[in-house]
Image 1: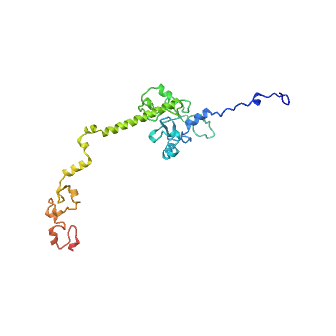
Image 2: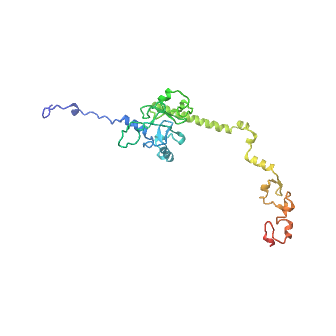
Image 3: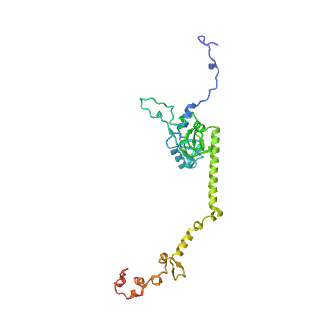
Length: 288
């Protein structure tokens, strides 16, 4: 079996083995997932938001998708409006290693831009991070587990277990976040329906004061009847003085509440026919 020169072939030269598929670099995938928008796949830009499933987006990308629904990816179908996302309250990494390189300094490309404000862990995907749906503050899961509290460690806002959402979940955690999202939305719909039903319930409305139960038309009518009224020849209806002058059948000469001195100022008065000069109020050119 020797070749020229007495060489002996190796096994991989004689037997063709199946080539392995291309393997992804787990570290590169992790870095990309925590530094880029889940919709546009571009670098995250502030303000940074997250949905109820824990996916991270740039708010500008979410607005573009909401305006152009034809371009909405399948991963963002659950986002119907800005109420379905929450602005993240992130803590800046004080190390400053994420600054642009100037050529004369050491640049740590592995450093994360944000950290946990409680225990100082970097938000780079190596550690599990969560955010609170009630306020949007971001912490590491270790901080939430170690420091037991019913209020946020950063802004002191109350929260419950359902408000804790894992960022960039995978596998079973993603299913848990989806279950929480459906339960939260169902509870919100039920509260809105109950509130709307309470306002339409006649039993609830009967307990309100009589002043609040009056309709605007009734209030307006009561104000008109309460003020001074005038009898007009138009079927004997009672009208407020402010509206009586606008009626087609109204005449100052027929108004019983006006004095003769006041009526004499108008051309409809009988004394106007005897005047030979212009009217001193209206300056009617009829008498010039």
